[in-house]
Length: 426
Ligand code: UGA
Image (tube, rainbow, N blue to C red; front, side, top):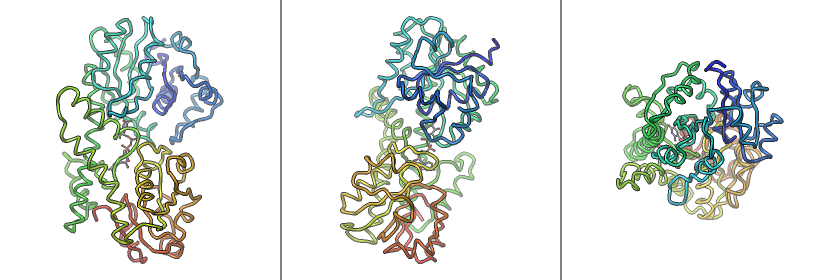
């Protein structure tokens, strides 16, 4: 067996696990992926893909005979030595990460001596040290993931960097993990476990900080007559700042930023340090969602009995993920103000029906906009740009008011078409 064809174990066939499994199989490795849910394993074995992620279904199909799905941990242990832990670590009510799934993986690995657990799940700083203390016979490597939903396959295959953390005694395993990534030709950051864990949390917290910062610049720009999209363009050309993550909008959502920013804040607090900046980042994000309601009220007055269309439910385009999606907060807030809410999303609306309270799920954007007193663009799905705004939409809406929560539409075209257009910070 050559090192670059080392068999790989993947524990957890969720979004991170499936992308990891499919990509390692594509790189030529035998991959043994274990999940505790039999129905999921059976449908994966039949070639069905339970999540929407561009390119994933194709990779899983082409991985063919190199990919094995099972519920049986013993099968994985007998086939692979490196076990990538890809179970989720959702937030608890306190904002700390819930490690119960990681703990049950550890329970399943009791007694394994020749294996290393390679942690891809996002865990609090100190988790690796704690695991080493409790299961010293198991090798331990931290290998955080930096995948973005919607571009996860591309992010895996062309990473900005690969972070590999190990402490004394696990160097052999971490060399083997590093060898798996060699074909990707990316910078490899080798460090201790705690620093690797911190790199993950600090990266997400920094990106969230960038978003809350530009959102505050947007809010001030609205008052002072500047255009935040121009401001961001001018700022982003400074190489020290960079153009990425400077898109002002109605706040960040998703399964990672809200959770990881809170987790880092809690972690700091538990260690006796008050992380003031992150407290503000979280607060700005919450307020940003609510400002949208104020923009509708500015034009419509009371929202009681008003028909409001929400375009987009997913927390961002190219995913059906609605975890911590701004749309859910908006739908609830608008309904509590007395509005009748109609939502449309090309992939995510149907599955989030229960989370949308009494909102009506429309079958198309036009159906959602029909006779609406106002509309909010929540998710920047490309099809929303292609709508016939000046023609059919304008005719169908009872009142041509659009709050563009992502600065996605062309403000001057919309205004020329007779719309009252409210962007974010412009
Ligand atoms: C994020 C990170 O970008 C990944 O590097 C990381 O691996 C992942 O979390 C994770 O920890 O698993 P993701 O949650 O998929 O990825 O989504 P992003 O594309 O980062 O967007 C997050 C949110 O920020 C979205 O709601 C998006 O609309 C918002 N956003 C992003 C803005 O409001 N403005 C921007 O300029 C960029």
